[in-house]
Length: 99
Image 1 (cartoon, rainbow, N blue to C red):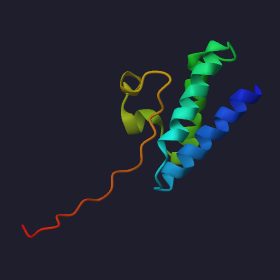
Image 2 (image 1 turned 180 degrees about the horizontal axis):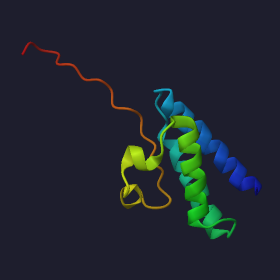
Image 3 (image 1 turned 90 degrees about the horizontal axis):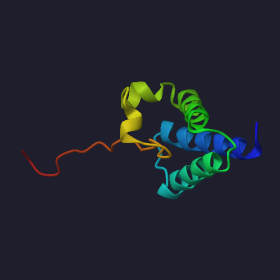
Image 4 (image 1 turned 30 degrees about the vertical axis):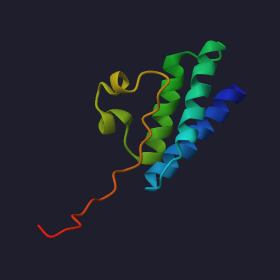
């Protein structure tokens, strides 16, 4: 595997592991990975399909579900390449005043 793809795989793994643990992910981590995704395609190292397949594999390995399960069959319509669907879980919200 090309060294840049290996670095991208590590970034995917790190991001999805953090999110799977319920922790917050700084936007900068996602944005840097998206930049690498785009650079990989522009440089001809891999095509979009290969990069997306790598991201999907890393997501499934770390989260335990696939992107289709979590974001729907049309997830790429909502997150077009090179966007990464990497969001923290919603925080529980409780009313602060009596009902």
